[in-house]
Amino acid sequence: MYCCTVKKETATNKYLETLENNFDEVLITKKEKYQLLTIRDKANKTNYDWIVWLQLKVAYDKTNSCMKTSDEKLEGVLKALCDWWPLLKNPNDSKPKQLSLFGDDEEFEEEEPPAPTGGEDNRWAKYYRECDRIRKANILKKYSFFEVFHDVGEWWHYDDTDFSHMLPKTQEEMKALIKEFISGEIKSKILQYNKIEKEKGCLKDIPLSDYELYQRTVRWLSFDLVPFRKYANISIDNGYHVHEYEERYFHKFHFRGGKIEGSSWDNKRYGRFDLRKDKEFISWLREFYAAPYKESLSDIEVLKKNIDVFFCSTLWHKADEYQWQERINRFENWKQFKSDLNSFLKENNIDGSNGGGSGYSVDGYDAWYNKWKKGNIKISQDKEYRAELGRQTEELEIDDYDRVVVFDISGDEIYKKAYELFYTSKTPSLFDLVA
Image 1: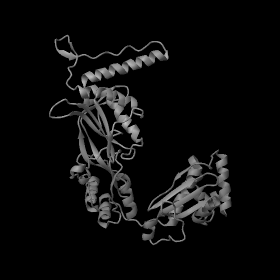
Image 2: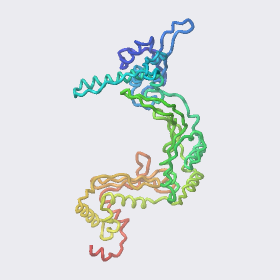
Image 3: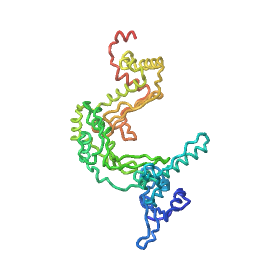
Image 4: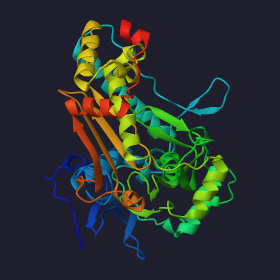
């Protein structure tokens, strides 16, 4: 740790120079996780040496989540201070007053000039500069320093206040909190001010496996933790417009995707919770949502679902007219089916060779398809869950996300699999023969 005065040739030169011209010392002390900015004047007193007007913790490039450099963060706070330093150094200055028509003293505010009528750029530039000057001057007359200058939550600020002791530490504590949130019976103070928005509709009365029931719950489960009150305050934008805010509540942490994270400027992670194998919790969810139990889908069932997604996407707005699952029974082999489908696309001016997206994904499966060139369907499954089901994992590809690649089929393979899985060998109807 060492202390220095930033040299004037640095990127913060013009802002630092302004502050140095108005205060006796502007110090920047390099700490391990932040830069400590101190603004002070000589006291000329016998019992103390300095009047410290302000101390601020300024983050380094990686000590909060803002991607700016350490120098840029320091420059950001110095720039903000340059606007409002008179209020810091002279907080008790008397305000200019003007006698009102009713005999009361009211604060005088300078009016902005009328907008120019011409279109010359230099006239408008001068107008905007003058408006900025007047708005800033009016703010200086009306507000105090800490009303106009804020550090908490700013992109350059380093906050080491630790509220994590208020968070749940164990799976049991987290489970109790999640139950409170889902049921709406909030008892915990850290959830006291949270607005609850549950998506029961996506789970209510739907047959689901234990795995899918838990995953769908976690997918929508999102709530904030540790509320704090922010008093009425103002915010000033780059054009010196004042925006007033009423008292409101915010939160220090949020729970998303099974894990607790801090604020947007906080790089820490405060715990991940996985209750998928907690039988009591799964039973509670099933009872709460009245969701009947269902076995996990097989590989073939998921493949069939995604082949249907592929062809429905390929046929686009004509999918209902073509009815490919029924129509495939008209043909003796997959080649005839492919030829017929392509002829139908051409007749209806449908481009079935581009696009794609996520497919039918359930029970730990993730599916993707694309129609580029000859088309592709790729289906993978969570490796751990697949092993729990006793399904094959050996001799299958493991992708970069440690998932088992169950199917990866392209081009004619898609048509072959479609014919193999959907052709029912039924006796042709009169309609089929006519067609």
